[in-house]
Length: 440
Length: 164
Image 1 (cartoon, one colour):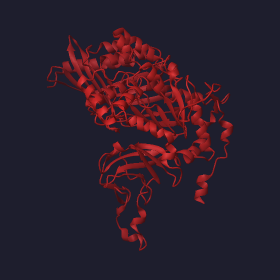
Image 2: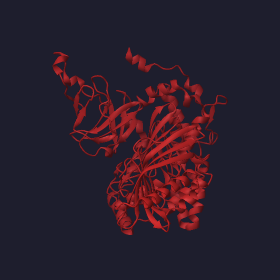
Image 3: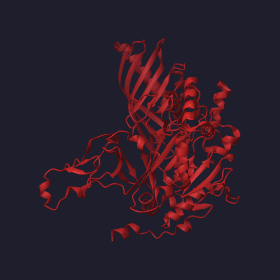
Image 4: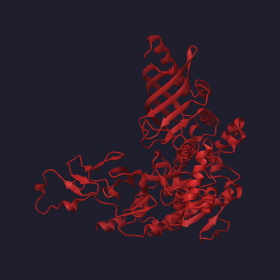
């Protein structure tokens, strides 16, 4: 009856906690709800786990987590990416303790059970003592039941069955494509390193904020101050600061379905000419800039290359834990109801001139990571967000901006609103409600 | 080449003075310790101690302009991470000094910074090793290069919002 236990619900009435324009604080601090999220979201739905460029060669591996469960992502001898639960089939020890590396196989420290890169048990001391019926083939490492790869982005589901990755992504898969197409090879790589951060806040505060345009005005108020500082040195430098109030009202918030939400910057960029990388050309030799444009046109064709230059990458959160913004991909691991681990990686454009990729690094270091000017503001407001939620009066979290405005259906049939609407966050919660009520 | 005891003492005193100004959040004075040209580097590598900054990510990789911006922002009252300001005390020790070929002074030292955040009532420990390149400036020095190698630069860390 183990299966039934896994399906057991807490009996919480989620529809009473999630209204159109508000959700109850309990959803962020309640331990039972967090446990139920593990079962219904993290251990059942498609979850982003990593990018295949993190393990380029045979034997390369990284260790990470799906929810609280430790996993190993490894490139096997046939160049295939495998994802194993990080657990010896004998007595449950984790078999890989390094964050990343290259190995020929995995050896459990406890009793020496040894697995190859395909996860097959190949050797164990004193095997004869396990009896005649013991068959090593029955003790391979456990693979995640379902593994999907869309242009290098690895998604895993711990459920044996469920909707396909394609169905889960839906139209959001086009956003992944748009992200990769900013590269002159159509390929990006997570090869330059990863910022690793932790916040004392519930994971949902992170996905909300990531498609919240309204917060930029206050949370990132120091942008205006820095623009002024830069302006004293050079007016053109000041123009390179991220846009604050006065621009983002044109950004269209699109509910892409299945909890995925895009803050579509294209209307803003097409109208204002705002470039998606700020002035990435700053400090990049002209020859490298020209080489980049030539490669983009050769790979994508002139028209598409021009469109990409204007439209830029998507700003999209794929439920529950993958976020594309500018040059970065970001993802989250929920550690507990009140702690979340965050990973931000500036991506490298494969086959782009080195100077372009170096500039991407320098630009991102100013804004993001644990000491970045933008992200440290966010890290702080997430923790304040969580500290405030301890109060037990008027517990509703308001997200009603735009709730009485019309919802516009776009050409793709997706419901949208602009003008700093919290439609983006409401869309996430409506999907959450469906999933927590047993849907997918 | 290593230095005489007196010279080494002078170098140590400079590092302690730098640490004191940072602890006291006297950031304009702290900035004045730096050589004010575009060649300076204030650097916290990410994921490992030795990264190639042309190809790999850092937590901080500031030139002078960006360092100035960092300090301006921290002092602006709008950097919410530092409202209220962290209380800081750092210990600098195990100082090794030697001369570089270009005449600068190379030092390695260990640090242990205790950060107290009043707003969350947390104490955070920041531990690591620092490499300084110092330019002799009369009786004192100017900092040309500072690389901070955190022992936890490859693990999930809390916000780093003070001048380390």
